[in-house]
Amino acid sequence: MKQYDVAFIGHYTKDTIVSATGTRVVNGGACNYGANVAARMGLRTAVVTRLAREDAHVVEDLQRLGVDVFVRYTPFSTCLRLVYPSNDVDQRIIYVTSTAGPFTPAEVTSLQAQAFLIGASMRGEVGLDVIQELRRKEALLVADVQSFLRIERDGVLIPAPWPEKEQVLSCLDVLKTDAVEAELLTGESDLRTAARRIVALGPREVVLTHRDGVLVYADGQFYEAGFFPQQLVGRSGRGDTCIASYVCKRLTAPPSEATIWAAAVTSLKMEAEGPFRRDISAVNELIQTKYKKL
Image 1 (cartoon, rainbow, N blue to C red):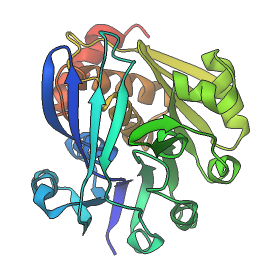
Image 2: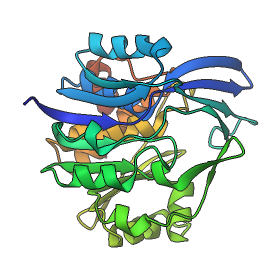
Image 3: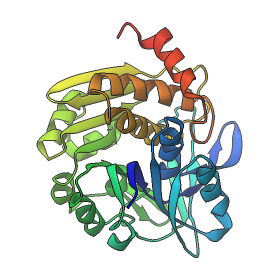
């Protein structure tokens, strides 16, 4: 059985992005953003996803990068409409027009990896049964909290109370959140206080993104690094790219190094829409110019 370095679980999403600069369709999804990072880092990468056959070109793109894609074809892909009503890129409304349906434990049972990263668009894609199946494996289990906090109501994604919070968080090694989600989860607006509260609920490490950068809490220590994009074009996928790059580097490096790596990769990703497509040498160059004093 093939052993992967990292496996991503989540829907591909067909994203219609509406902002002051116009409307365009972008291939999204945490699994897509994450696998592009992992493959370019030279890691043995797997993706478990669900999508419509009309979007099979996304699978082919990942396969060309060397990613093994375990795909379930469904009547519809998950299609989102992301509307940015102002110049504040952290303020957006996400509409759901279709979904590819929930994963089952059988879709992950035979997969082996050093790390599994769950990145869903909303609650119901990856249930507690799938998480418990993954927890049985000898692997790092990572999830983005948006996978559980967000629900679809009247066609719009909104945060909602999370009944299975304690059960899910007790299974996780690393949780990714943003500043807004961290406050929803803990009631704390201070990022460091919120991170400590989250760790008390189960995860060993917290990766917390905000508009200026990333804050990591691991082993009782905080690590921070800013984002330095030359131009901000690709806000969508920021968090997906950040947690993927952190986890991929964390397999072989301490939290301090993984934090800087994640910030640098994410900075470069935000310079263009869609997944990170730069050469890894560009990440190292940015670290030398912007982060070497950290």
